[in-house]
Image (cartoon, rainbow, N blue to C red):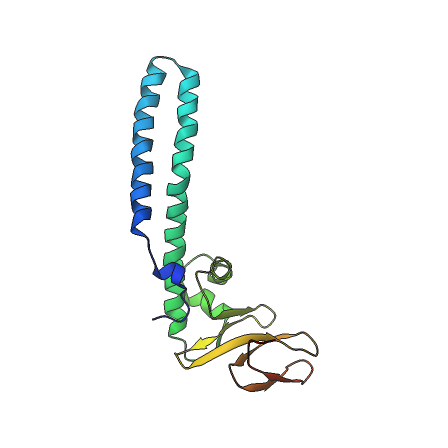
Length: 173
């Protein structure tokens, strides 16, 4: 089980495919109807048919985009799962993962909740891995003294990199 993938990527609904099949079937029927309407020079009804095509195309296009996102999330998670350290430079990821700007993809997939246990440190240009194996779990906390965000191994103590305050790695802030 990959610690960077969420259940959204792991679970797939069979009912979704039935719905998409229905949409594709309706698109085919509407295209045939539009061709007949155009031959009869019924422009208004043909235009309405084009609008219906767009309506049925939307879920199909969304599913194609979602599948691409799932594939990208799996590629990224697989790559990060093989990293033995707590972090990796963004430049390394850009060099080793073959996709358009993988760091921006990570950011986008984190926001969509397809990836988890990853923190992007834009200042240091690092991708911090918040989960190492099953027993080590990192949490992101804010320093109560200066507000700086940092990552701490859960249950461990760490000094703030900015003000030196002692931080406890728990999520109950």
